[in-house]
Image 1 (cartoon, rainbow, N blue to C red):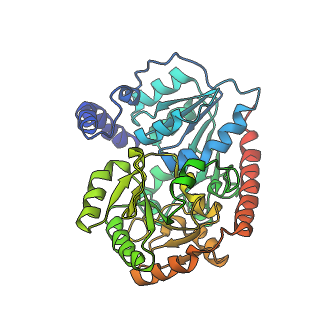
Image 2 (tube, rainbow, N blue to C red; image 1 turned 90 degrees about the horizontal axis):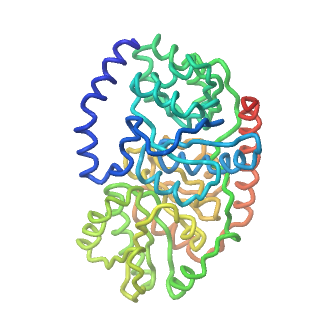
Image 3 (cartoon, rainbow, N blue to C red; image 1 turned 180 degrees about the horizontal axis):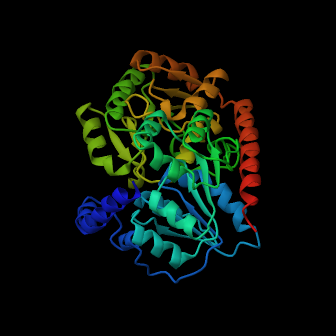
Length: 412
């Protein structure tokens, strides 16, 4: 099966120039750095103690506390982080790490993965979430570089795809030295996929260094001081229309209410603004720095990495990807700030987290505009729940410590 996979990835490599041109024109590739995906680098070659691959923003944010711990370790001189998306690369530049630098993850072609390993010389490879790459795994194994899958997540749909080629799946997953599953479902699936060494440490996304008290938010707090606000986070296509209609209902309850929308992908901004205009809603963007007016309806956050500033000002948040058949987005960041979470029914990606929130009366599920309106109005005047903040903070600290305990065994 590796032969057929090699043929497929060789073909992908051959047509990659056309693919990159298309993505650059669409604004989905960085014209200055896309060549890193075919292992052409402007950065100086350096040997790395640790390499961490986190595909996009969510995965990158979840490993920030891990990286910070590694940076304090005097034995670790250099850390390389790879991601795939331009948005995650932009977030990384804001983090100001001292020992850690970023390049893009290469195409999973046999030649390119060998070149990547030879160039950067990692001593330990950590893959975050569901990043399983057959050629990279094979070549890391040949060089006897340990492979850890951190915060591992395998869903039923992914398992079914791998089980179409069971022998290939077992060969690929059998190369993993240590898997740290983020949930019990993944634990079960990793066993089926031939992973030998599995340790339960918990989902890293429970951890967050900043809480309600630590966010310096004077400018935004002053900006919204004369308005009632609530948040709609990580929204997807069509969800904004639902939220716009919901806002019109809320406006009847309070004329000075503003809905803050933080879209999952900010490249969708023109469409979102157009959708809001069609609903007759006045929209301003965060980057415009416009002054809020009495008729402002929607405040659209068009910058990555600042969501926490808005969660610290609100006490109720809708979390997107849940009104559509996407599987939901991670609700823990707004929950860590004491926000009551409202979500749609499609949350398969985070079943255990939503179960925890529901059990602790921190969330509510509905796809009804009327019920969502009622839930928001009920929670709008409540204070952020300090008890819930402390509960999630405590769990997050324990999970971070467990993950570091197992990883540190591979740092010699």
